[in-house]
Amino acid sequence: MSAQATIDYITATVMLLAPDGSDTPGPDDDLLLCDYFDSVFIEELVARIQDDKGIFIPEADVVENHFRSISSLGSYVEARTA
Amino acid sequence: MISQLIEEMCRFIRRTVRDEYRRDFGVIAVSGGIDSAVTLALAARALTPERVRAVLMPERENSANSTNYALELCDGLGVSYLIDDLTDALVGIGCYRRRDAAVQDLFPEYQAGTDKFSIHLRQDLLGSRMPAQYSFRITQPDGTVLNRRPSPSQFRSVLAASNFKQRLRTANIYYRAEVFNACVIGTSNFDEEYLGFFVKVGDGTWDLCPIEGLTKTQVRQVAEELMIPASILNRPTTTDTFAGDDQTQEDMFYGLPFDKLDPALDGMRSGKTNAEIASASGITEAEAANLRLNLLRRHRSTQWNRVSARRFSSWAE
Image (cartoon, rainbow over all chains, first blue to last red; front, top):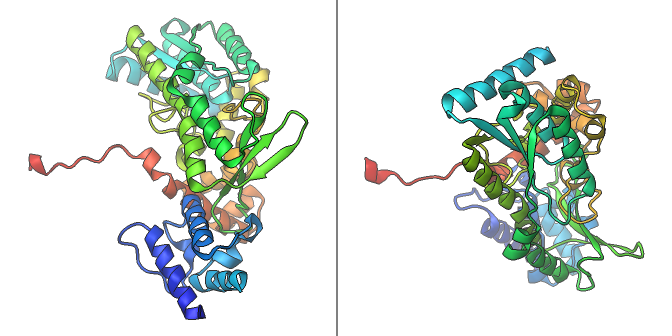
């Protein structure tokens, strides 16, 4: 999967979990400032990515550096699936 | 200043119970913790002890100390009390069974009745902007501790089953309130209300609540002024929700000691800057910025708990 395809996948996954009517975040937008980015959302997002990508995301990796934007999360997922 | 605040809260109780709702009594669910102790003492002062009833609602997973502290408090204030043990009702509605099944979904080795279960929060409120993440923990009789991250559905299942405790307490206290022609006086403080640490149609449901505007630190100041027994005043703020539960509220939910959290909450509601909050809480300005965002996020993400039902009203137009 190309880097762009990963970013498109993460964007679509975020939008599937976000409330109806939410703006689509750009690749470098600050996800942590989104209203819906709370404990439940992040658990759902981690669970969805683990299922879809067949990877395990350990607790220690659920940190701001990886989740602050679509592109940072894309880079992390790419590294885990490589 | 504290004594003036106490007088204002007492006037609020008298005005609401007698004049607005026209009820004869106030009833209060007394847990043995500091919030219900302060509320009971305020109500006894406002309405006279004869016009207040304390309702103790233990169940099999509470600490025995909780009931003892509550009884000591009622005796000291001269308030009559009733003890309604909710264990049978909780068994009947499946609270323990459903919760244990959800725990076993994550920990197949979990032995209900002998292993201790608890929920723990992982969030660096000061150093990161990441939302809280929860982990489940079981402690086996030999001291083995297992921590695992629940799936969203496992987390919701455990919480929903455990929340039967608060919801049955509310059903029961409204039964008592109707019998006594009483108002239910709530015991929620500002930390709980703002951050959503209460159960909808559970401990978040009442007719009036005198301490809802007080942070935990302010509740403690009022408790000292009201001479609440030291056993309650000095007790760690445990959740007392799970068997053998010795976790503090800071560990399960707040993620920060009250001496740092409360100046920040107080600063946010009074329009203080991050620099002012940092100074009051003894943290850096960058930490105050993270803390503000994390607290605001918790407030917004628990909005469902707080709002009343929405009604579609176009028929009336």
